[in-house]
Image 1 (spheres, rainbow, N blue to C red):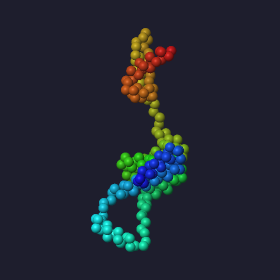
Image 2 (image 1 turned 60 degrees about the horizontal axis):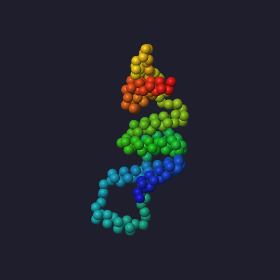
Image 3 (image 1 turned 30 degrees about the horizontal axis):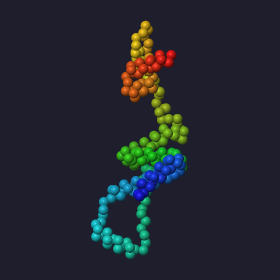
Image 4 (image 1 turned 135 degrees about the horizontal axis):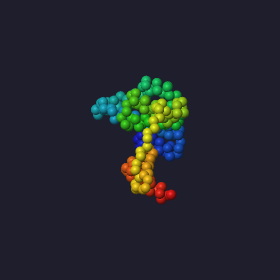
Length: 195
């Protein structure tokens, strides 16, 4: 069973158990396994069969063992981690950041790009505004109130009755693939039936 499959199984088990420590640990293992898999896929064979046999003989005769090198994070990653002291300390925030990393990498965003770090920072500020000292990023924009849509009633009576639909009602109408007028007719029917 591959390292990635094992890490994914551990992640599912930790998620199902609700164990955030194991979840972060499994996420880290998945990241490492995916990184190793990516490196392995990018490498081209450097040796032919004859060279490999010669090298095997040379390696077997050596007494010391060579340890594989672990890649070091780039300068941007280290600077980001230094700026975001919660990373590695707060389990919930770290798990979200790691999950965002996976999502961004899968969608083709370069992990050393400014877009990558902006995306993670903005999502973290939206999800944990209390940690960053803001209620939300959206509060900087002035609130604009849009007028609701007015539609004519489904049936004509002695006095015209206008129905104002809220944004939520308009969204529901759109979701159910109804025009605002059709939604208003149904709304009036429901109101009349309920009294």
